[in-house]
Image 1 (cartoon, each protein chain N blue to C red):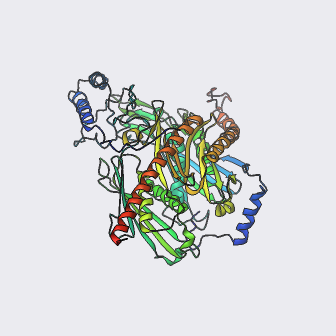
Image 2 (tube, rainbow over the protein chains, first blue to last red):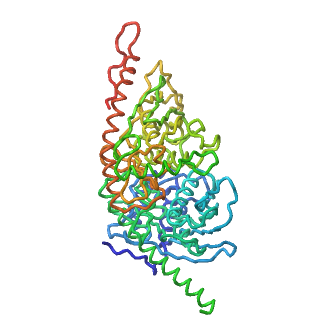
Image 3 (cartoon, helix red, strand yellow):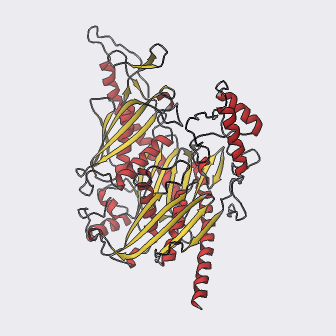
Length: 316
Length: 304
C-alpha cells in the first residue's frame, strides 16, 4: 500500500505566501467600495494564481471587525495542478509531528503532542481513589476525560472553552476510545482522569488529543492493551488528502478521523461528516489508517527514548 | 446509556450471559435475526412539522419551527439549521432532569452532522434577504421512551418532521425593498422545505466475540454490547456520516461490511417514511379545498 511517513524535515507552512495572499485580498477587496467582489477576486486570482477565501480562519480575521469583504466567489483550489496543497505538502504527506513526555510535573503522566501547528497537552491522574463514591465501579476502573480548548487556541478568542456541545462530545469520544484500550479490570474501584487541553488549534485537534492521551497514559504507567493512535484524512478536489489543517477542514469537504490499535490492527474510533460514496470512503479511510500507523511508529520511538533516559538516570 | 449514576438500571449477570450466549447461535432475545430492524411506525401531528416515531418500544417526537433571524457573518446567504434534543427522566430513569447529559449531546450532534454536513436540507433557499434575514429552522427532538437505539428513531423523527413542515411565504416590500412581509397561511399557502435526500441513521452493536454484530440494538443489548457504530447513509449509496466513538475495536473489513448492510437497509427505511407521508399529503390536499365551492385551491403538490 502507500508509504506514508511523517516528514520530519518539513518546516511548516509557507507563511509568507499566506501573508501575501491576504494582503492582496485585503487591498483589492477592502480598499474601494466601487470595486466589486467579483472584480477583486478576479484580480487576486490573476496576480497570485489562486484566491484565498477569507472565511472563518485563524489567520485571516483582521483586527478590525468592519471588514466584511470576502473574495470567495471564485472556487477555491486546495490541490494545485502540480499536486501541492495550500501549505506546500503533497496529498499523502502528514504534518510534522513532535511529542514530549513528562511536561506536567504534578501529574502522574503527561505529554505534549504537536501535529503541524496543532498543539495539545494531556495530563493523566491515576489510578487513584474515586472521588464520587456513587460512581465507583466494583470490578473496573472509572475513566473520566475532560477536553477543553484554551481561549487563545484559535484566531478569535473563544468565549466558552468548556461545556459547549462540541467539547462534551469530544470528551465522550476520547473517554470511550481510551477506555477500550486501558485494562480497567486490573484496577477496580479506582479512577483514572485524563485532562486534555488544546493550546493551538489548526485542524486535527481530536487526533492530536488522542495521541497525547496515549503518551500521557504510557508515561503514567497505566496498563494498556495497545497504544491508540489517530489521524484524519479528507477528500478535496477529487484527491484524498492526509492530515487536514484548519483551512482544508473548513472547506466543507468530508473529514474522516480514524483511531486504531496498531498491533491488533483494529479500528476503535471512526468519525466522518459530509457526503462520500462508499468506494471513495474506503480509500480515504485506508489513507487515514496508514497515517495512524506512521504516528504509532513515531510514538513508539519516543517512548523507547524516554525509557532509555529513565534507565540512564537510574544508573542501570 | 448513562451507566454511571446511582439510579441507572443494570442487568443481572445471568441476563447478560444469556444474551451473549444466544447471540452466538444468532438468536436475539426479542426473536429478531441479527440484521433485522424493528417495526417502524411514523405518525404525524395536527400541526405542520410535527411527527412521532415508534421503533419497537422506543418513541421519539420531532417538532420543526422556523423563525426569521440574522444569518451568520461568514455565511450571509444561507439559512440556519439547528437541532435540540430533550431527554427527561420520563424516558429512562438514568437521565438527569435539566442539564443534558453526554448521551443527549452526542445524539444531537450525530443527527446534526447527518443533516447539515451532507446538505440534506437546502439552506440557500432559506435566504430571504442576504445578510439581513434568513429562516432559522429549529428541530426539537423529545425522547419519550428509551427502548434502545435512540439515534435511529430520533433521526427518522427529524426527517419526517422536516418533510411535513411548511414555512410561511414571505416577500420583500416596503419603500426600498428591504422590508420582509411574512404572509399568514390563510392568505398564501405555506411552502415546504427543499430536501435533497434523506440521510438515514443505522446503528450497529458490536459484542466482545469477534464478528458478532447486530443492527438496531434494544435496551438490553445496549447494556451488554462492547461498542456501537452509527452510520448515516442515504438511498443513493452515499455515506453521510459515521460515528464510532471508541468502544470495542473492530477490523476494517467489518466496518466495510456494516456500511454495505446499512446502504441496503436505508433504501427500505426511506420507502417506509415516504409511504407514511402519502397519508399526510392527502390531508394537506383536502385542507386546501375551499369550503364554499368544493374546488381545489391549488392543484400542484410537491411530488416526492
